[in-house]
Image (cartoon, rainbow, N blue to C red; front, side):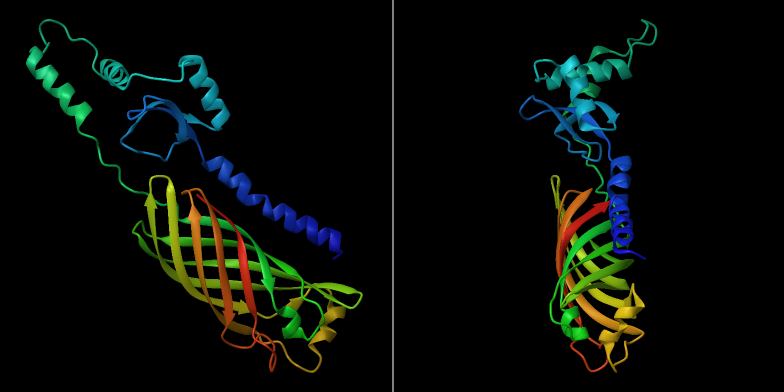
Amino acid sequence: MSKSKRLAILFSIAFIPLILFSQQLTYKVVCDKKDHKIKIVESTNHSPDLIPLKAGFPFAPVARKWADENYPSGTCDPEKVLQDIKQSQNPPQTSTTQQPPQQQNTGTVTQSTIPVKQKKKYKNTSISGLFLSHNVDKVLGVEDQNFGADIGLEQIFGQKDYYGGIGAHFNVYYLKHASDKFETYLFKFPVFGGYRFTHNNLQVAFDAGFFISTKLSFFDEEYERFLRDDQAKSTSFSFFPRVRVGSRGIQLEAGAQFGITDVVENRDKLNVYFVGLRFCF
């Protein structure tokens, strides 16, 4: 496989999380009770301070266009908005079924002054694209270190702050030795646990676990000579800590991977540092 074809495949895979993320995320127009402003937020934002006006917009600019057409001043009256919503939900009754004024007023006050507590919901499936800095040059005994790339799919279980999860990652390590440029690759399967919390639209997560990695392999068999007389292990293990910071839908991720067992017998253990984006849905 030529280098141009391999790069084309990697770039194509990298666009998958962007497509999935764009299909999952929607927006809504809301009235903020605190500052009386019209705002555009993600549909998953259920803050009691925000009164939904219209939801289901696939893109933020579309929601903004609707807001500009219907609320050109950019401001709103929360009391009037709530009153309009109640009137649309409870049309005027006939004289034979209309409730006494006191009873109607009591119901209105109760609905407008007692906020409904929204249940916190996490997005547990994610796809990541990470940049890698590694020491595969030391593992293979070549001269120069280069960079690498990681594409991963992970699944977290449950909706609690404490969580556990599994996944699958594909890693490519780019290397150079004298005038030769070549790539190695392996698959990693993480098993991990951690803790996450949210504050308004911010989500932070800390987790750690173990990677179970497959044999270090070469795209071009010609470069297997860099293993010399040593033998690549069919399975290796490593430990990783990491942190994720961002919204519920997209997060910046950073962490490190420290080898526990040899990737190649009698060579340095594989260590990797990574940073990139994780898309959750």
